[in-house]
Structures are given as C-alpha cells and as structure tokens.
Image 1: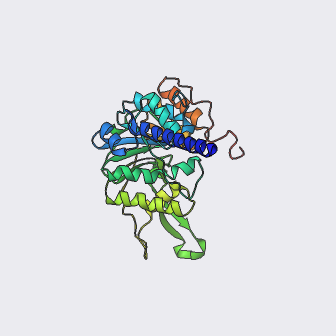
Image 2: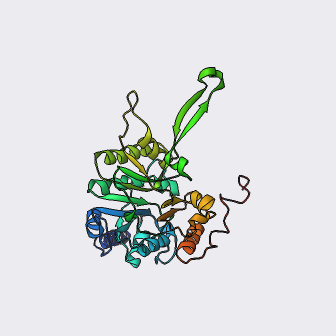
Image 3: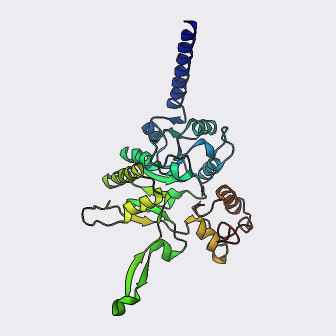
Amino acid sequence: MMQIFISLWLLVIAVLASTAAATAYNTSEFGSTDLKAVLDRIGINKEVMAAVSNGALITPDGKFGMLKLWIDGCQRAGVKNFMVIAIDDDVASACENLGVAYWRKTPQKTADKQASNHGISAQKFQLIREFLTHGYSVLLSDVDIVTLQNPFDHLYRDEDVESLSDGYDEPTAYGWDDVYDDPKMGWSRWAHTIRVFTLNSGLFYIRPNDRTIALMDRITDRLNKRKEWDQAVFNMEIWFPSHDDYKSSRITVRIMNIDKFMNSKRLFKTIRYDAQYSEHMPVMVHVNYHPDKFQRMQSVWARYVEGDRTALDKYPVGSCFNAPDC
C-alpha cells in the first residue's frame, strides 16, 4: 500500500512539474506557446523574421552556437521583429536567457523522423502555415545564415514567395535557355528548354493568402506521407505546371538578388576573388553549400563585421581542396 502511495505521489509531482514548465513558457515575458501573442508583440507591419531551432544549435545559457551567431546578426543589423521557433525546451530556455522573442511549439514529425538538419527542416512548413493564418508575412531563415543588413529594407513584396536561389551566377539563379541535343532526331535534334536552379527553402519571404496557405499544406502533406528532401518538394510544388488531373499551386515567385541575399557557393566561388566586390556588403549570407557551416559563418562575420579581409582565404571553394576526391 505504501509503495502504491509513493508511486502515485511521484506521478503527481511529475505532472505538476511538467505543468509548471509549460506554464512558465506560456506566460514568459519573451516567449509563449501562443503564437498570436508573440506576433502581436514584435511584428512590424504584419511582418516577422523567424528561424526554427532546437537546443543542439546553442548552449543552454545562450552564449555560444550557430543560433547565437544568427541572433547576433539580427540584432546588429537592427532587425527588431525577429524571433525563434523553439521546438524544444532547451532552445526556449536559451532564448529566455538572451531575452529573445520565441514561440514554443513542438511540431508534428514528418516521415523523416530524424533530428537531422533535413528532418527538422521538413517540419517548418506546418509551422509557417500558422503565421500565415494569423495574417503575417514571414521571412523564414535557416540558422546557418549571417545577417549583415536589415533584410526588410531589401524586399520587393510583390509576389507570393520571394526566395534565395541556389544559383551561383545570374543565369543559374534567374534562368537560361538550355538546348537539349538528341542527334537521332536529325533536323529537329535541338530542343530548347528553360532551366533555373532551385529556390532555397532555407531563406524565403512568404505573404499570407489562400495560395500560400495551401502551398504549406501541400508540402506538409507530401512530407508526412513519404520521406523526401523538403527543398525538392518546396520547388516541385511551386514550379510544376498543371497537367492532366494535377493542379498547380499557382504561386508567383521572385528570386532575391544574388549579391544581396547570397549563398555560400556564390561567395566562395566568385565574390571573395572579384575586386569589384571588395567593398560590397551582403544583406544575408547563407552557408548552404558547405558542411563546415559554423566555421564559415564565423569567418563571414570576421570578414564583414570585424573587417578582416583575409578571413575567407583559408577555405576551399567546395568542401575540400581536392574535390571531388575529398
């Protein structure tokens, strides 16, 4: 009888502790489980910048990690309306320590149930949907991004989705006429195709309307049913045209300027070597092409914030100096 009593008492204590923790995040000065409360407090012109993160990207005290560098960039650039989507209590606690706005939300796991970069990234579309249903535009940013200027000063806001490109020059980012050659066709051997590199699902601005909410639903539905790369699904659902019984998402698109919103291939392949960019200041740099993300982020900070013009010199263009034999 005593053992049963003790077990029940321990269960009550555990439930009370869990409830207290949830209540703490629900009533915090900086964060909440109520998204609308956070949006209404920090939003400017119904816009926010948001990053999805777990505790693996920042120390519990909030003093070190990729997310801390992401936050430092936002604050230095004067972005007042940024926030973190905290998908676990560890990152919520770090945000509390830093006094950074956050929404505490545990997303539904997709078919990719791993806590990897791709596994977590696949969950963000269901989260962004909630922003859109509240009437807010969102600049969704991955954590492996260094913000150097306020991005809201450099958006056009004229299309449904305004996205970073994985293209590393103007043709690959904005599109080109690519001629396909099939010699066996003889006279008609050359067929013209239109090609463009994919939109990067780690940095895009999305406006609230029926089309964009439906887009988030379509992407989430696919990712819940089968394990796919979220960026590939993001692009297919945006670009593929209607055909037969398939209806397109009817999303309109703008590609962000490649020298303002810069991917790391553009930076390390071209920009750092070209003298005409010696005084150029990007708006945001996404270290998406390289696995040593945090180190390169720190070097981007050293180059553009601390003024060390040699900070980028030590890195190979790709993931190693002997690519593809890494």
